[in-house]
Amino acid sequence: MRTATFCTGSCLLGVVLSGCFLVPTVPVECSARRPCPSGQACDPESSTCVDATEPPLAEPEPPLCERDCTPCRVHADCPSLVCDVYLTTALGGSCLPLSALVYVDNRDGACMPGGDGDSPATALCTLTEGLARASTTGRKALRVMASSRSYGPVVLADRGLTLYGPAGEGGRAQLGGAPGIDAVTVTPGAQVVVDGFDITRGEAGVSCTGGDADTRVTLRRSRITAAADLGLLVNNCRLEVDRVLLSSNGKGALVTVGTRPYRITNSFIVRHRSTALPTVKMASSAPGTFRFNTVVDNSSTLAAAIDCSGQPLRISDSIVVRNQRVGGSQLQNGCQVSNTVVGPFDLAPGSKLLPEFARVGDVDYGLSSDSHVNRQCCIDRAEATQGRDYFGTPRPVGPRADIGAHEVK
Image 1 (tube, one colour):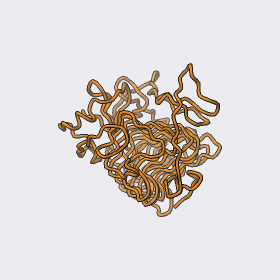
Image 2 (image 1 turned 90 degrees about the vertical axis):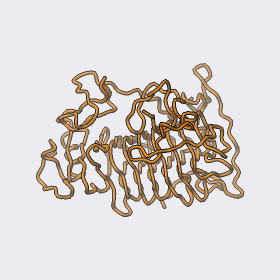
Image 3 (image 1 turned 90 degrees about the horizontal axis):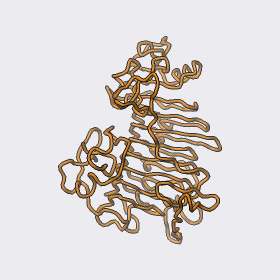
Image 4 (image 1 turned 135 degrees about the vertical axis):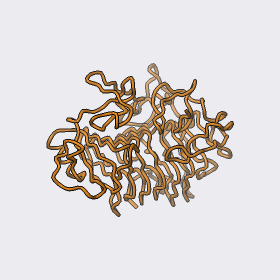
């Protein structure tokens, strides 16, 4: 079990024990005309002051491709086999040119060395080779092809680097699988995007240590599962998580430490069994956003499902049900609830209905479209004018968006 300083006083890893008393904090409202005190920032989503050395991550505006754009919806639409769905066009995403990429393909473990990585046909065999080729050519993107054989753990130290996996299109690309080694390690000063991978069976799924450097990690359209420790451990890194499945990691889904802002959206956090940590534990001094997520069937011996560490984090437009409760609630230590379903028996404010789930794609926690309960609690119940759900469906489908990670078609 790795260690980090999560709290002070007589709390063990931020969990309330006998003799440990938490003093409730009263959020201070703020606006353009009512600035926050020195050392605090105004969170635009909650309009409250938060302790931070950096402002919260703003609502992302999808970058527009305005020149030399080839519109696409999936990787197969592009000659380069890379459709960046976050670089938007009228059709959806935009194709990356072949010349911008380095290709890696272990060919199900049967790769023959000798490729130069400049095309799918001449792909390099390992991520180590691919990263070295990107460094020498100045290219900032790797396309990692689907394979039945894991690509192993990877250490990312580059600035401005993006790894594109299959994102479930025509197979999967796995990272991890080495006992005692994190599947993805992001080192101080790195600024990376990991898009479309199965990150599995590492010590931690993804670990990022930022130190004093401007370190950033963005995780998109990926699955982080079956880590021995935490699915995601972030220590003073700017973090963005969108359309990610976190499931069945040994000691919880994610922990953030430090003062850097974070944003977690359109993701499923399910089926964790921890003996000590909460399923989700956010830093006590970092501004964050937690919106359009589905958190279900998580338990911990000593903690509730989501621990906000005294920070007035707003849990917005989300489903948080069937998780471990402490003191009558699945949320503890400063969490604020906004337009969120918490299910019956939870003392936190929010809808007390219990959604009806169905198997959708690769998860068991999509919203059943023909459920009367879901139409009361979750479907057409949130405001959203942009973005996509976990499965890539644009929000909203109906007059309003759906609560949680799934937008019902």
